[in-house]
Image 1 (cartoon, one colour):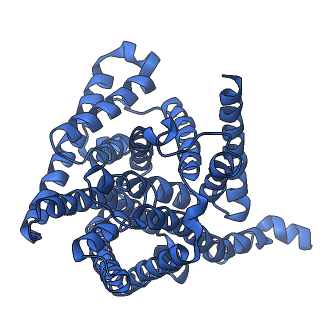
Image 2 (tube, one colour):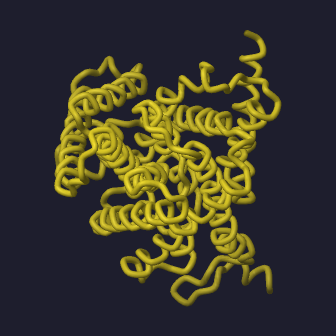
Length: 421
């Protein structure tokens, strides 16, 4: 067992230094961790990543665990009062980008590769949404406006569910050989989000009730709260709702509880303390580090052939153009840097990695399906990292180079006056 524990220790150290590299250079820790995982698995063969290995069989569990923890963390950091006006626009942006991307990608695959329309739509659905764990990890330390961060967080959270629901529905249509029913898709999406909102609010209300009345819980607050987060996800998923959305809503209510308390004068106890937030940051770092390393383990040399890479680049080009067109229409007031980040922030990850196994499980054989999906995951993360490195770095450099504080109310900083005198 000693080698396995050494790998765990090395992964945490790599994750730590990857975070430092991201803070200083804007080279994403996502890419560093994925490459580290690729080195451990396919390159050096330190870990067995064959199709029947335990590493591959753990994908659904690892992916779901990362989804729960990182969506909850994203909810805690989401200032709902600061972006309340942006939420309808964020939802409209998300749905429009997803629909346009999926349809255009499906058209390209159907005409370019000769796939049946339903199979092409399935591929588009699997890679049609951004990955919430990746987006949350990338945007939380950028210098874009809070509204832009919130827009990208809402988009990535919603598209996890959009990808899963749409892909499962298309697989059902393929296996049952039924025509696509738009009303069925709309009703399914509506029920998923409604159930998720209900259980997310209920879970948050239960936690506030517990904290408000049971004093002994303070000693083990974080672990009890985390158990409730897992419970909300499981119950919501069991009754047919989106567990990810429910957890995200739970996090939003808990993270904004003090602001809600002041606004509504409810006199709640603080449901999340400073110590609890520190624990959450540590757990999020741990889960994020191992998740992205794990994704790197699943890559293969076969995925990087010239035809596969060319197809993946073409698909990402379609996604980028779709995002550019929609943000041009819906978000004309954003700064140039924010617009550039919105266009390039298109990393694929969790949902795509989990959904890639569904067609084979359902008995649907698709040539190069897995190769295309995993290549898109890697290249889309590189594109998102490149976008941050190119467009977000200038702002930081300008801030660093300021020789003195800006004038306030027409007055010059007094310390600088003394130095000059």
